[in-house]
Amino acid sequence: MDISSFLDGLSIAVQPINILWIILGGFLGTIVGMLPGLGPATAVAVLIPVTFGMNPVSAIILMAAIYYGAMYGGSRSSILLNTPGDGSAIAATFDGYPMAKKGQAGEALAISAVASFIGGLMAVVGFIFLAEPLANFALKFGPAEYFLLMLLTLSAIVALSIGRMIKGFLAMMVGLALSTVGIDTQTGVYRFTMGIPHLSEGIDFLIVIIGVYAIGEVLYNFLNIDKQKKEKKKVGKVWFSKEQWKRSKWPILRSGPLGFIIGVLPGAGGSIASMISYTSEKQISKRTEEFGEGAVEGLAAPESSNNAASVGAMIPLLTMGIPGSGTTAVMLGALIMLGLRPGPLLFEQQPETAWALINSMFIGNLALVIINIAMVGLLVKILDTPAKVLYPIIVLLAFIGTYTLSYSVIDFFLLLIFGLFGLMMKVMDIPIAPLVLALIVGTDMEQNFRMAVLSSNGSLGVFFSSGVSIGLVILTMLSLCYPLILKLAKRKKNMSEDEDQVYKSS
Image (tube, rainbow, N blue to C red; front, side, top):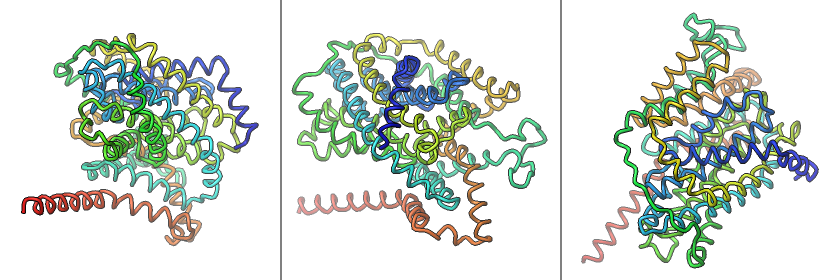
């Protein structure tokens, strides 16, 4: 770690304007994370227009604060209403809501906030020691390695769409197809523009992102608006007992590093991190029977893990320019629009940007734990905002943001098309993340493939010419086999359980 760069980044992060963006982003992220159906990716997509014209450093600080703020907020509705704000908060419903039913809503909200704070803090420390070495390692990558890395990213996120792998693959193919629209930069040929001049520069990925996330989510929730039932809960005292802390501290400390490692893996994200930490904690706990009935460690573990995962997902984004999650894919698109290109050269050419972000995470996590404990009463009231008021506001922000991209009415039609497409994906249970990631990396993936093949005179052996490329090929194959391995392991476990039952009965 370069101490001078670290201190330069710290001096930028503590500037009053950046502290304001950290607090504002964390607060807005917390609010959106609380609202069922809207997650961090939607929050960043809807608020992208706010970053237009901003200093790129302040913009990335704001978007990161929105991201991990949403991770904090997602558990609010999970605990109080048994309705997770997004996928990463699902595990918080398992024991958080039973705690609220027992009259321990205040304790649950407090332990959730503290667990998120500690998990995020541990992840930032890991970020400091891992980010720069990974960036230096990434500098050794050539076109072949970058193509294989992007292929690994796509295969990982498709493979992790467990139970929906075919749907995830189809979403990925649609994203790759959309990335080819426009003028081919190498040949100058117009591709799939349908004679519309506006499409010659391609379909702006921000339009697709805002369409499928913001408009699609709003349309889906609006269709189900009459089915949404709200149940008010008394919050009570917002703190936890010594006994609850004693039961929570080790699950928090175990799950933070676990979530961070999972977050670094492209395509994994907070949902998988929280579920793995929950099941792991349940397996090693001496109170297994209490899980699902209001076990405090069953809430603390996933909350520590998913916030750490959100910080971990920033590492592949900053060091290699590869989104580690659906939210960081949205952030990558926004940063490119702002003229900031995340990647291995970021730590060499703009170290103050990277270290300002890292230092802002310390400040942001501290601000968020205060917000989520001291302002619980106010935050909970936001859950009572009528959906018929909230959703039109989100749609209005989406249209304003889209128009400011190129000031073209054609983009409105594209936004509506992708909004309806996002609704269709939601109804058909097709994962959106593979589409977004494929759209973001598709152009670079195609160009790197072409450059690698041209440099080897048409030989595909270039993709097996180095230890790094061979390792990436192996990891890609393993990621594709992951669902099969998981299925075989589950079948083997069920068979062994059946044999044990037969043995006991005999």
